[in-house]
Length: 457
Image (tube, rainbow, N blue to C red; front, side, top):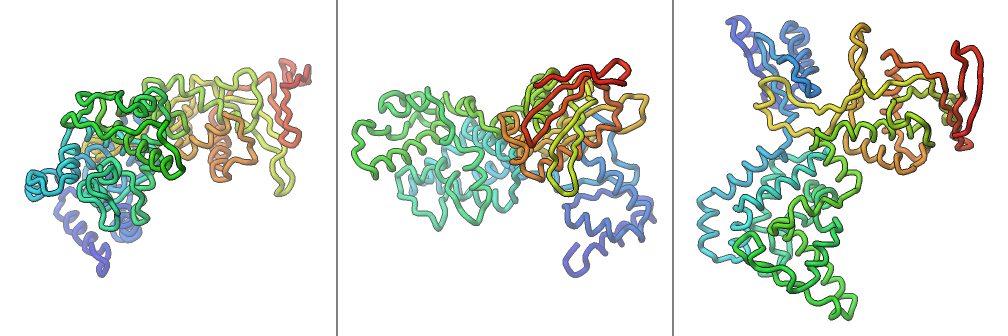
């Protein structure tokens, strides 16, 4: 496939394969796949139908469903790959470290910074902690290109042509080059935003790093060579000295993350921002039952910010009331989906494709299962880092009118679809007035024919 002929060569090849009765494997990126789907709709209708079927099933909800691959065609959607996945990024790093010229340059010792960075990056523990940082970037929904990953990996060893690294200083450490901003590469900004150990406060670690003699040489993983300790805070007398101290402290903490036994993910144990929490949820399916109530509570609070019985256990079907194009001034819920029909799931490629693709999930789904006798498919809400951040703000008191409209539309569309899932009826309606910021519960008679009581929440 090329820019001049487009997808025509692929279509012609498929036509010959179909005539010869041969199976076809299509491994393709997103835009070429889009072009191909437009092209073969009329020329190869059978294959077009099979591609559409497999494309819709390119990710499953972690239920171990049947393999969607057909008898005549296997579709591999390469857009599901993220170069930051462990399998891919690890191979990029080790391929570069195994290059004979790079190994000779490191062994020669001409560049002391290069030799140090090479020795550190070749260490299994340092590599594992680097991959853990990439995992955090993946969880945030960010992606990178293969070219950008190669460039970043090379920069860890060689530095950047535009950088002002002073030989023998912390600026030349691989752990500093990893977070050095470069407007050409979004990955650098992503690492600083969601995966920088220096931005996570950890009192125990911070206290040790601020005391010059509080870490021993034998504690540092690579060659037992600790960095030069910080000066005593009492010696700082000027603003410039304070700025240099902070910069040096950040550099020490980043290197501590990679090389010290108390580093690694231990530094992120006290990372309670929304992304840190979402990353833990995404990587810990054993705690899904506990996390389910967080999602349910946050969605309910998007419509009624006050506490009421069942707010953490049942997903309510909220109906808004507004005039013309004015913002909705009131919400009412008279039905709900019990938590027994809710489940957190993680997407994965189906069947044999799971091992063929280095897929790393960047979202999960909140599934609402339909009663088996109803015949409707499950309803699901895709929860990524952006939506989770919004839900976290809502749980902590963010008013509805300050929620991003795009995220609100996602929630509203999801709740609207629940009306077909045979919800349970409430004997007590929950009403929230956004204009007066007041909520009430209205109890009805058993036959739903009369109001019996009203109470404020």
